Length: 131
Image (cartoon, rainbow, N blue to C red; front, side, top):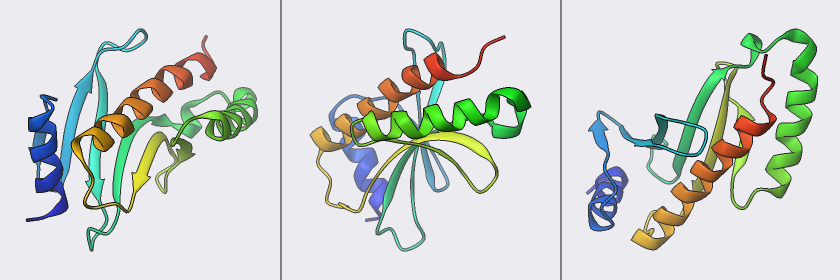
């Protein structure tokens, strides 16, 4: 059994709805600031790490004058957030993520990590430059 199969069983156990496509589990959340927030669960190639990721817009879609402040604010929030990072991935997309190398993760642990990412997305909404 692969790690994503294990996690999908945990999500079933705690009644979190998701879709399973190829090597990604995708959940949709409604929050105070998002109607359809996508959270993805992926693993690295050897399944030694699990990542809970919320993708956002490309960093370069942010107005050039606002990028520096956003980057600093993301770094500050990464420091304050519980178990979550605000980052820019290799495709320059802004992401919120939690990661673990505990591939024997429990239902309660995955629920907590997902909750941290969802809450951090609302924080990103608050610091993201608006027009």
